Amino acid sequence: MNAEIKKWKVLEEADVSPSPWFPMLKHKVELANGLIVDDYFFSPLGDVVQVLALTPKHEVILVRQYKHALGEILLELPGGMQQKDKSLIQSALNELEEEVGVKAEASQLISLGKIANNPTKTKQITYGYIMFDAEFNSTQKLDVTENIEVLTMPAPEVLRRVKDGEIWVTDSMNFILKAALRYPEIFGV
Image (cartoon, rainbow, N blue to C red; front, side, top):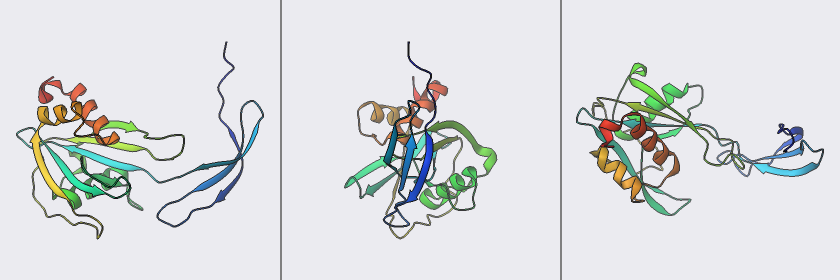
């Protein structure tokens, strides 16, 4: 039988960030079995929000943009980092308006839960929301590094693109699949 799983004990923490844009911590930790690891590195990147916004015709609003770390142009749900001094919901609403020009109210967002992409090396949780009856009622307010094409496509088509590997960004894929499980009639499941 396996021993009881316990959290590691942090003995020391040092900020070794190469820049404010990419935080990095070095921990000295004691494992549950007493072993000391003095060079455990991870990045506390901060939390992320994403919104699966559906138009009244059940079309999903997607963004197509270049992601430099992968060197790829990707199709995904609108979203971004939780903004300083803003709640998750407020950050989600801000990202939705900034990236795709949809202004909404907090009461319109329904939680799809949370996911962690790489809990071994990053401290980052992505929170997903679904929104119905989204309308393009504002203008994009892009960051200097953003060049975003906004697309809409029927929910069943979006699900097919996940299945076929055309939408392959982890958090977008997961929230599309979670939405399809929760609302199968919309996604043609």
